[in-house]
Amino acid sequence: MSKRQAAAPAPGLLEAFAQTFDPLFGKLNQREGFRRYLEGLLLPTERNKTLTGLANTEPGVGAQEARAQSLQWYLSESDWDEGVLNQRRVELLVKEPSTAPNAGGALVIDETGDLKDGSHTAHVGRQYLGKVGKIDNGVVSVSSLWADERVYYPLEVEPYTPAAWFERGSANPAFRTKLALALDLVQRAVQAHLPFKAVVADCFYGEDRTLRSGLQQLGVGYVMALKPSHSWRHRVDDLGSLEEVAHATPWGGSKQAGAWLAVDRTFRDGHTERWWALEVVAGPYGPHRALRAVVVTTDPLNLPALTTWYLITNLPAPHTPRAENSPLSAAPLAEIVRLYGLRTWVEQSYKQVKTTLGWAQYQVRSDRAIRRHWLLVFCAFTFCWWQAGQNRADRLLATDPALQPTSTPITGQSQGQKKPGRVSGSAQSGLARRLTSGPKLARTSYHAQALLAGLLGPAPAAIHSAPS
Image (cartoon, rainbow, N blue to C red):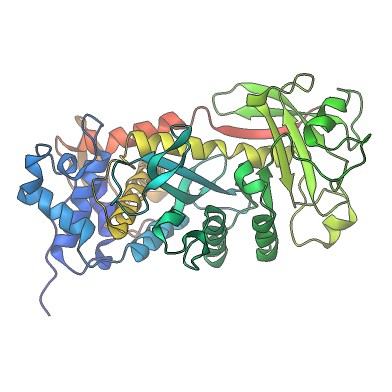
């Protein structure tokens, strides 16, 4: 058997990252395409991340140049399996200690839409696009994201295909709603044995009883938003909505269920905010019921729209008979607040994958090519976290005598400074050694890492109950 040809290496740690995916590509041009595509996505955003931009050719006429055509073929026609690629990507995140998921995290479900012209691109149609806040022509996708107070990263994505694409519209068995796609993404995470404490989502998902029932059948907890006007059957003179209960509850004095409880939220930049949480005891909700409703706000008197959450959860309240018999772990009010606060990460992820990594800048039409572009953006995003983990391991290796390699270390140069590498095939990383850096390294790898580091500042961190 002939020796497999090596692809032209990517700069710095990106080559070590790419080598972990090489077994998934049976052809040299596929391994080359993977490296060149990630290099383009990770460069600063002076140019759009279209195929001509990624290949560094002139827009329009440059699409006929060989390097642009090569990337076009890699994305649209080449016979690699994007599902297997994503599985390997998630495996890297799970195995890396700094990004490994844990049972205290959240599985965030959300959808996003992007403007697209024309009518021939797969999944395009006139539909509500959250990015522009109105109905317009575009493509919508539903994705799952794992998050805790340390890191966040996307797991999977599914495009939503409008009913107009199907014969008989929504009556066609092949048509799937965004809610059905969301449930499928949760089921995949469960089947992959990815740990999380609760599914977290906004009110589009929280208001749907069918989705909540499906999550209950999967045996997973959830903390999802409801509309302020969320109501139940009630007598004319009784309180009948979450907003009414919140306005009718006096502020301060009691720590019992049905009273406001002070909760302090501490953020990564060091500042602390006092919020208030109310365990609703009305209608079908209460700490002893199958479902709990919680109102969380910065101002119990005025309930400002931008900083007030109306939440529903199936996580049992502590010290109740249901908590003793439920397979789900109990969650006090502070834990409910913490879990929903992790949803902040999905908004921050959109800022990076869309603004910097070119999520919606593809110029391809087929379903397969669009999915591949999205997953390659996920790979570029994953590289940023993976590289940060490798750099932390390097610093530990350089400062701990017990971890010093017995053979001669490999040195790489970045931004004029030499930095020790790890021995190829070390037990700690299982990755090939890095290559000597060149002028391209600083912009390719360190730019993306610095951007991710910038996202950590406003992230939610520790939270605890405070005396009211």
